[in-house]
Structure formats: structure tokens, C-alpha cells
Image 1: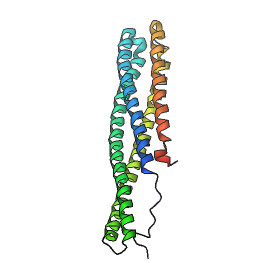
Image 2: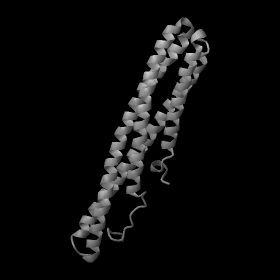
Image 3: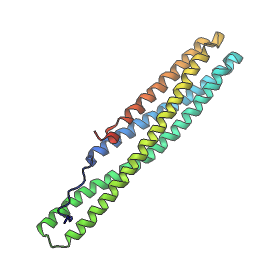
Image 4: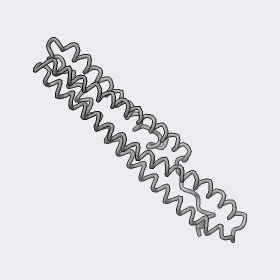
Length: 207
């Protein structure tokens, strides 16, 4: 019959490693937020430039506005990701505390098998499982939110490349519009690379 002393803890990724991985994810998301703010400023300047160029750059102006909206949506998405990360950090911290406390309880129970420590240990093991399950749910939510952000950035890439095409029709403003659209494309690709890296994080893959 299995009891709190004979039960083997389920194999889990080391909580300490998870904490380090979450911190790295959070730092990368902060960087993406900063870059998305840069896109917003660039888009406002591009809209102004398109107005100066007149009807020839009307399509470029529309796309620049869409990129501005994209940057705002991306920041909102990243803020939601940050909230999930904070939840993960909290749960990982609890799991780390659980591990330490459970180890002490297990040692006490092994020294006195008939003591009250056995019952306390069993309750603690159950609580540990609940926290691990909650962390697993948060991990899944974070992964799905990250996938949504990646799809959003894919759309941003399409907008940026379309702006490059429209820039060619800007007549005398074409060189300036092309430069701006090239910067858009480069920044969106940078964000895409960051999110692609996060998707491969060991926090999600487990290795």
C-alpha cells in the first residue's frame, strides 16, 4: 500500500530551473514591449510623411496606420503575457518552498514513522500536487498566449512588407518611404525572432 513515505514524487522539471527560464522570458518580453513602442513612433512619423507625399502615398499611409495599431495591440498582448509570467513566478516560488518543507517533513516522518508528521506529510504532498497542476495550467496559458502573439507578429510582417511595396509608388518621396518601410520590416523581423526564441524556451519544451 502506498503512503506518504513510499510514494515517489512525480518527475517534474526542476523548479529552480523553471524560475530562471521565466525570468529570461520576462526580460525578452520587456524588450519586445520597448521595440513595439518604437514601431508606434515610427508609424506616426510614417503617417506624417505619407500625408506630405499626397495621394501617391495614400496606400503607404493606410499601412502605416495599420502598423501603428499593430504596435499597440502587440503591447497589450505583451502586457497580458507579463501578467501570466508573474503568476508563473508566484507558483514556482511556492513549489520551491513546498519542496524544501516537504523534504524536512519526510525526514521527520522517516525518523518517527508513527508520528503525526505522516499525516502532515500526506496533506503537504496533496498541496504540492495542486500547486504543480496550477503551474502546469499557467504554463499552458502562457504558451497559448505566446502563440497568439507570434501570429499577430506574422500579420505585422505582412503589413511591413506591403508597406515596402507601396513605398515604391511614392514618386519623389519613394526613397524616404522605402527607408521607413525597410526599418519597419527589420524591427518586425526582430520581434518575430524574439518570439520564436521564446517558443523554443525549455520552460515549454522541458529540455
